[in-house]
Amino acid sequence: MDATRRVVVIGDVHGQLEQLTRLLHDAGLIDDQRNWSGGTASLWLTGDFFDRGPDGIGVVDLVMRLQREALASSGKVAALLGNHEVMVLAVRRFGDQIVNDIDGYSFYDVWIQNGGNEHDLEALTESHADWIRSLPAMALEAERLLMHPDSLMYKRMGKTIGAVNNAVAALLEGDAIVAWDRFIRDAAKRKAFVDLQPFGAALARHMLHRYGGRQIVHGHTPITAMTGAEPSKVTRPLLYANGACINMDGGMYLGGPGFWHELTPMKDATDLGTAG
Ligand SMILES: [Mn+2]
Image (cartoon, rainbow, N blue to C red; front, side, top):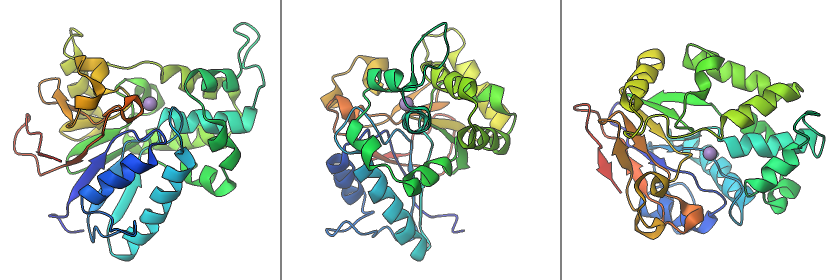
């Protein structure tokens, strides 16, 4: 692998296919025909392709195609598993089945409450489902720990990235409804690393110590929910937790334009790299 290859990250898309297309074009990763033009570049998406927006399936179809095209030019397109992908698979598998008699809800209810899009569910094929099940929950690239949520939820699932990814994959292959429910409930938690939490930065450093990497790159929580900024004015990632975390979620479903961000080699703990 080329040590100097570009590594570009794009945050949570939530069905905003046109915005994703514009960002990929701006970043030089696709041409006017929407074909991969990124050469050997590496592209990471932080997950949450579905729900809250118009065309989650269109987004996934584009990412799957670019993944094949990038491979042909020794580039890479990779994506993290988001909790909305897990929710869509849960509804596909369990439908309106009541999860437990005490709470009396189904995954369908939870999904609808979280912006579930019926069109996405109807258009979801077995090949989409297989692709989702293949997505890593965590990954390491360019000295960064990449994961969708800004929470501690993966700690209970394994002590290494490989163990967490295996545990999540096993969950998604199985019919253990309680385990699916726990994952989806866990994903409601966020902001574990924010500076307002007394130990936010320390918890981020602990995650890095446990799983590797010098900085956490995540999505899941729109930057506007951390800073109070107008969604339309969020045009770059948020560096926080004393430089230990980068939030990539531009809140595209809230009307944010989104952004792309290039992970440059880390020089020091507060390096944010080059923002797009
Ligand atoms: Mn999420």
